[in-house]
Length: 145
Length: 82
Image: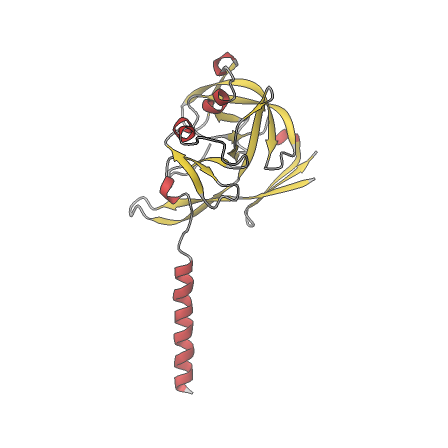
């Protein structure tokens, strides 16, 4: 089964003039997360990040699912520069897109220091046979394994 | 004949100006820089916004539409390199 999502446009501003000069397209997809039969009322836009080892979400989404975030296994996460953040791993169910297919049980690291939701290789990419970033067409394609 | 050429050139110029006008960025996220928003399922409108998810949730009395989407609107002069 092949599912595709268009990249999403975000406004781009010029530093000097402070004016909107264009749009940046990003591989962002909507997912739904479920924890112990409870699910968030809405979908969450997540950046599909091939450079991320794991899924990383703001802790607030865990709290909304009544997850005791700090009771999860502690993970230290580094990214740009020398900064390091703490995150707590929990097992959840992830449904991709509005129709909720595909869906799979995986883990998400929730952090109080993380501002946006990232889908990484271990815990998201590994559930698919192929993930294709069609940069020219600005389309992201998933093929189920 | 000369007049016709002039008209053609003028039409072409007008057409280009029209195309330039149509290229104006019309993104519903523009007023919501650095905020969390809830988008309609087709992403054409913002239902509610807040500086944080908590603040956004406070503005949502009832579940609007289960296919609405939480989106973080990043700073427009920020490049993401996670």
